[in-house]
Image (cartoon, rainbow, N blue to C red; front, side, top):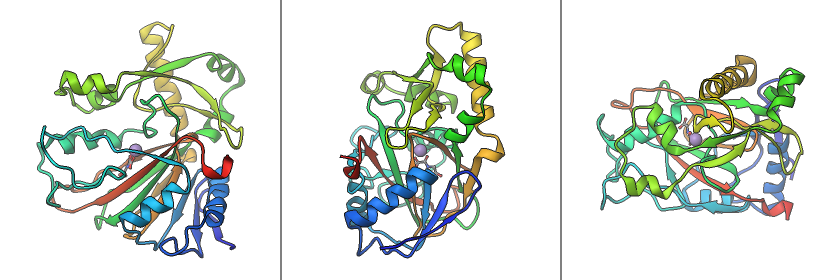
Length: 291
Ligand code: OGA
Ligand code: MN
């Protein structure tokens, strides 16, 4: 099968057409999509209109799924979606719009900071697959940044300096940046901080990327002010407009990104007026086609 692949940016991001993943997500098709991800890091596949079963089946072709975290809920509250699906919406378990003060809404706020999915977990998260089920008429775009290109453009002495540095990543750090401090001790204990290198070679392409995210609180073995200044400097460098692409959603879109070489962030929309129903599956570990 030959897909039509159209680059949307000089460095990364392509649109893929000529495939209907509802009825055809054979390994052969997914291998072609993964090859496009190796090159473009983010692929936009419009007009797919996947349901939950189809999204899970497509995602499982790319590797083992990680299950959604259910933080931000009250004890005993049920979730809107099954555990394979991360709920990236502004909706409650009855599909109504979350109120302004709802903890689940506060939890999602940190998605608007540049990040990679699950860098605060001690396992390599490879792909995220996000489907737009209902999208707002304005706002709520998703921005992406190419961390390979950003790395390659760093001055050589800085590349050298980063080689042996690591940072601590914690979900609680990024939530606190958005004012989330009312988490229970038992919640916090479920996700202790993890250490990630600042540079990492991609396991498939061997291209080196910067490893950054708003979850990164500090660089190990470095004075606090110096560490914060370096993380901020790298973050500003890597998110210059020339490394970024903004995706404006249409209902039915499937967007797949590779967390090993990109960052992303949500952008604001009127979440008290419009519904935004987005569902994410998240792949962990090596893909089937690489084994
Ligand atoms: C995500 C995410 C941003 C958005 O799905 O992991 O960060 O635009 N989404 O909803
Ligand atoms: Mn995310």
